[in-house]
Amino acid sequence: MSLLNNLMAHPLDEGYAVAARTRPKQDKPARTRHRAMLVAATLVLGFLLAVAASQNYRSAPEAEKQRKELITRINQADTRLSTMRTRQAQLADEVRRLQASGLSNTSSGAALQQQLDTLELQTGAIAVAGPGIKAVVDDAKDADKEGRLLDVDLQQLVNGLWTAGAEAISVNGHRLTSMTAIRGAGSAITVDYSSLNPPYTVLAIGDNATMPARFAQSSGGQWVQYLVSNFDVRMTITTEESLLVPADATIALRYAKVSGPR
Picture 1 (cartoon, rainbow, N blue to C red):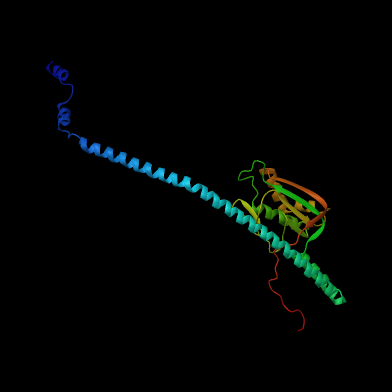
Picture 2 (spheres, helix red, strand yellow; picture 1 turned 30 degrees about the vertical axis):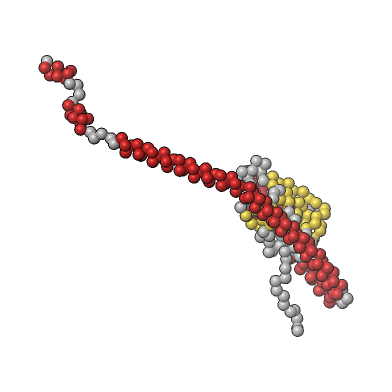
């Protein structure tokens, strides 16, 4: 009974009481200093954030002004470039007329002019008109990353048209030649380093009676049809009796050599 009475009288072991009495008391002034330092750091951080926000607010109008000025300069440069290309095309046409008038005086000159016409047609130096097909391709209606056309898709489409027998091709008014690059630049597709926006209108001059079927059987046509069936890419192809594919305004003479005896 004495053991039970002792347990009832002293339920907590004396060792716990001794440990509680010998525990060092916390330093209240140190705890207060830590709290004051935390408050000070918070105030300094808030002040710095307020200063940064104020500076951003004051500099926002200036940044927007610089952005608008840059856009204006880019648009002006694009306008000047278009004007210069138009002038270049006019001068090139004038040179060809003078050249043709000089070569038409003799039979050898006429044959040479015919050869020049063929070469200019093949290289894209002159505009071409005639029948063909018109293909208009666009991103999916609710385009995400999978439903957006890429540069490789446009490359496959163009290669399919060449395989189908196209004699001249343009994309959104840009003539394609052996020197033309179709590439991606971020989310845009560039042709000759000019950014294009969808939809992409592709004109191909050739036999419009056979080209549609040959294009559908080509690897490029099957590639685009796969995009239409699986990723909701939009495409329409129509046959046309009269199309105009412009000359490549970026063509320049790179080298020349003397033909025949000097």
